[in-house]
Image (cartoon, rainbow, N blue to C red):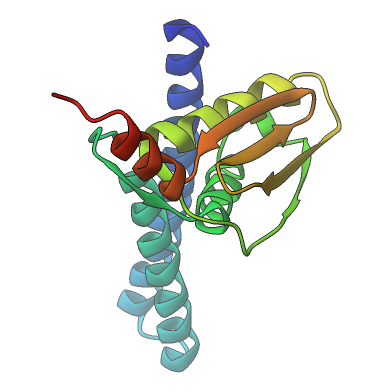
Length: 173
């Protein structure tokens, strides 16, 4: 993907998350105004505030996934796909696209920059989702590679044991 495409995906995510934050803030503002009027059901308003706080915490968790720190780490494909699905729901270019995520959850961990992997998957989802009504995201793996198929596009990531084998067989020196 080009830097322009990467920036467009990132901009779409930020716009979608900003929209979600704006909705949460509006709800909290309405609840606060209702409480000021004094003629409200405090239990219902308290429940509503609690739900909004949970939603805000999830949005913040998703926002923390966007910046890349570049450090390689073990990454479980199931966790990466859960995060990709959550972020895709906030991607403005995918609002009308049905995305079906499925694959094996018992794969060896991948090894690499988690944020970069996540952005690669999201870029593929946005690319394959343009003009589509639905796309399928599937993953599988071997001892050495986890493969993620997004529509017609395929991404491959080395597993942690494979990276360790390569390091052992070809030490830097």
